[in-house]
Image (cartoon, rainbow, N blue to C red; front, side, top):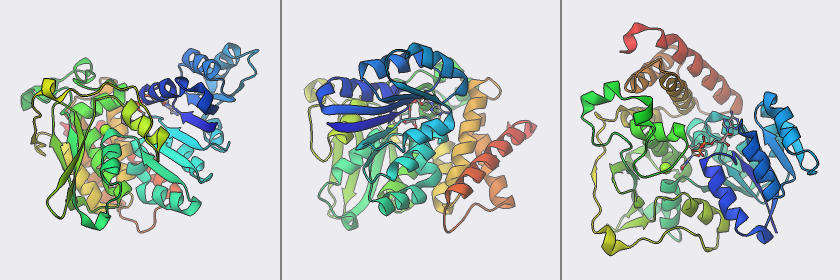
Length: 391
Ligand code: NAD
Ligand code: MG
């Protein structure tokens, strides 16, 4: 029996993880599940997987969770600290699937067991990549990427020497607006940005796909996880989302990873690693697919990609500032306070201001510095949002 804990079990990645684990209950012993406000679903999952502990991230949801689980013997806790404490219970495999920077600390705490952290929470690598990777080394833990592109790269690199890698290409579906004229993006609505053509994901990452902030995050993730120079990382638009990434080697070979756009593939790979186990995703019928298409990932159309290049070049605390500012800008777009294209303009301005005023480079990243920068960038984004010059 493998002991497993899922952070963010009620989200899109969390539900897919629960789905895989529920298919083989004899193989898993569920230690903890954590969720947010959807207490009814969290309780249902905890009962069906017979979890030891269920935690909601929000204090005011405690009573509802307690009531929903009364008489089951399942322990109940609430609050940000309780989510992080769930990581202190030993497990062999942790899934980090909280959305946003809130996923960083639980993942870091889980590394201390020296076991496996399956990492869907891309914000961890973007905000604190070098620190996270150093902590994993320190405790002898293994981080397995669960973002589909990074799982694809990881799989293409099995048995290869990083020294022979010339480039890594990650693909982008282009999101909801890939065929829209550039001008129309100014007035794109929340509902329009929330409909992904290929993937069924949480709302935030879906909007980030339309703006390419998601791909921007993934470029940074690639640099941090694989330890490769920024100039060797590329993005290409691939509308079918069947090739997830390609690795180019110094003999000219390109190794591509194909699979259906179903996150259970990347989750299942991490769950069975280092073996390959059966994963119930659709099998691709190549003759039926017929052709695969590729387009330039245009940095004028997608300013987020250009911002990502600046962040990779500056390094240090710029990833933490970038992510926090992007999260605050996304909140503002969801709340109807700014337009779709204002998000990138705002993030760009915030990063420039922080770079000028505070400097974002830093040799040794610490958790305190990352959290302080996260806080500062959110505040600065709020301040600059009031500023009419965003548009
Ligand atoms: P989601 O919004 O569907 O789910 C997020 C989960 O985190 C939920 O369980 C929610 O209750 C919990 N949560 C929200 N706010 C929290 C907080 N402040 N503290 C603790 N828990 C909180 O998100 P998702 O789409 O499943 O994405 C999860 C992570 O995985 C993100 O980092 C995302 O970028 C990444 N990711 C997702 C996909 C995908 O297909 N959905 C693909 C690749 C990477
Ligand atoms: Mg991805």
